[in-house]
Length: 278
Ligand code: NAP
Image (cartoon, helix red, strand yellow):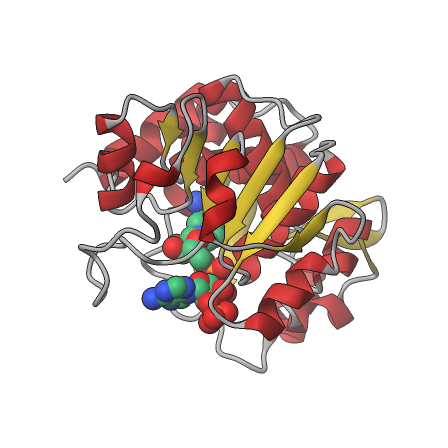
């Protein structure tokens, strides 16, 4: 599509940000939906998030995705934030609603949509375990609780962060341990254990022999596409997915905020797959 005076702009702010897959995913979405817009990466150093939001207003951008180190700092610069972003203290998507600049956190909704779409898993009434208690884990705990999970075991190395994650959903979440994994329907790995190019790339966060038949495993890592954990889960014949679905579906939620149009998820997914293929 030709760039003209009508072409709109969206982007992602962060530092570093040049490696981000967001431009690839969103531009594939704009092209498939025939929306006259482009999505670019804006390197923005720590401490300059508010200026980036001012620029969004000045240039009438469609919206901004937000990555490290700005996910907390942008909150003060928004006119309002959604309830889930407020609860998590984190914003990864900023969009216009009338004259307001609104901050949202789309990771949790993206995770749930990816679970449903790829594994046909509906969290309502299920027993879940989340390993880790960082930003991704907290978004997943809140989203699983909102989607009706009956119980959520939060299994984390350090107790204090585990408690913060539990406090997001106090009626269903509690601190758990690996022994609980035999009695859950879903296990989510929200630690970097198994991620490529890290000291623990060859490790799995737990021994899959503890899992029961019927348990499904979602590893939020997408590089590599099959972590040691997922290889072991596959060998046991259990349902599983990597983090690509969450990545693409959280972008799809953002796309809908930016454009008020349904996200062409298949096109966005295939662009993401192509970009990370070895
Ligand atoms: P984070 O905020 O740094 O949190 C990492 C969590 O993992 C912490 O709870 C930490 O425990 C735990 N952890 C780290 N190293 C560990 C180890 N060696 N053994 C056991 N636990 C360990 O990171 P994050 O942003 O939540 O990201 C977590 C993972 O999710 C990463 O792999 C990231 O790539 C992935 N992710 C995927 C998506 C997606 O769209 N697919 C989105 C966001 C994140 P402590 O609290 O004890 O330090």
